[in-house]
Image (cartoon, rainbow, N blue to C red; front, side, top):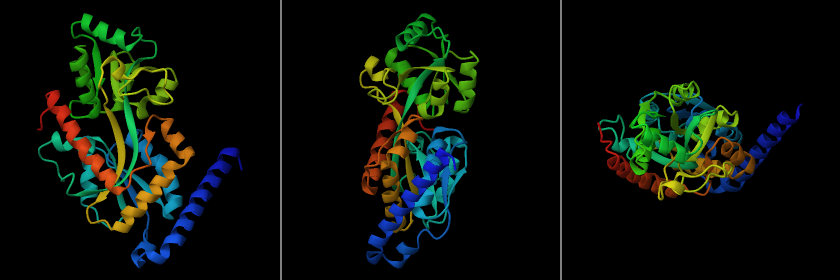
Length: 333
């Protein structure tokens, strides 16, 4: 057995041991339904295509969740319409605790961007657990002559709107961040929308667009390979692990636009499934190996939120991003 496989086996056994110990201590106080859940594989739904930030995070969680819960975790991608197809699927799923949704922040922003969503964000879902905050990035091609954020702004202003800034469209996080960057820096970049991060980064590396705003989780490997250059992160402070890269707030005070990942479930899901999922996911994220694995692709793990705190956070973020949408003139349609 090689070293990597040995580490994987030992880590899995550790999660199983912790889970069994926790179940043993709590079983006397739990009802029968709590002792028998989960009774079958749990489907972890992702509203985006494989390879994106949400998918990467979901798959990073799936192995330790399988060990902790004692059932297979099946990651399913139901992509389309900025995550709303996946969300609608979960909203109509049987609320028995065996269908969970790995939500990106866009789900709770969509409430203020679309008039006719096929679900009600706060009536059809209940919070389960918070996973991580996910900074976005301002990127250029690895050999671009744009050397810094100041250089990008200066060249954009000088080009009178000809410098192109890729993003995923006005009703996405990257698109809203690109518009807010334009507004607050007066860069005046020409915003170019792409259907997904992959298409945008391919064009960026091919020299068909000058710069791009994209989530760090999806683009970190390309930055490490030297194919893309990171000019700034969209967080208020520098991102651990990327300490040499300035935060946009250093140039534009108050700029703090990060995405995040959370787990939600259809309304009506048994409390025991929600509480245990919260407890076990928090325990998994508190493990340094798991946290480091997720941080290595960009997102910053937060394992401190109970169910009530997750709900309060989701509501506050929905309000905040709706306010940002109004500031940049993105109205519901």
